Image 1: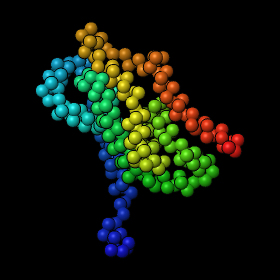
Image 2 (image 1 turned 90 degrees about the vertical axis):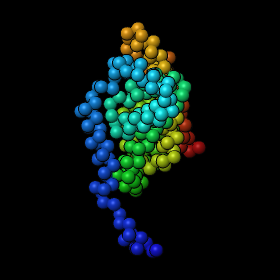
Image 3 (image 1 turned 180 degrees about the vertical axis):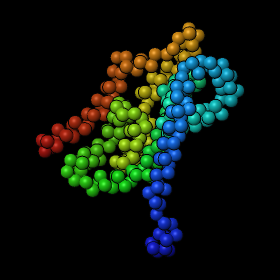
Image 4 (image 1 turned 90 degrees about the horizontal axis):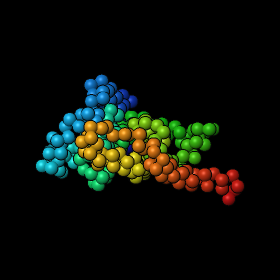
Length: 247
């Protein structure tokens, strides 16, 4: 079958068709914001803790699968409650395998958003960036030369919301496998902290208290994360210095 026959039998998707996955995400995200609001909170978890733990004890693998699907959907559709979901993972599955489960779920959700954005506009945007000159072209070239470092930096120090970062990374031509690896390992520090909080949640509820999510900004927690960020930036700085010196 020649190229013309193949094109005729499989016509290219229209722009609207390519945007359908993103439109679905937008509709679900807005609906979730309106109908869920702040219902995914610690009080809801506290009110249902006995039922959840009983179900876990009787249906461990089933609950694990359901949890991964729900958490991935929360991430993919930018629904409220991602932090609560991470903590719930620790509450239900302990620090291990809770951390691993949270990382798998968050990565799957991020990949879904990434692929939807790439299918909708990411490939076309990446092509335009590759063809750009001037400042934009230099920025794109710099990113291409430091993809691993930049990806890990984005994940380790989430300056932008997770959902926004997923969309942004879809337009810079990052290979899917590299995106998956950097996302999975880059979210490890944050996943570890939130899962750790969840692992001790029963004791917090027993005291009638609410977990302090601000713990991630404590020096003994934030310091190592910033140290990892510095390690991610260091190769970029070294390359830049060597470039200026002509080494």
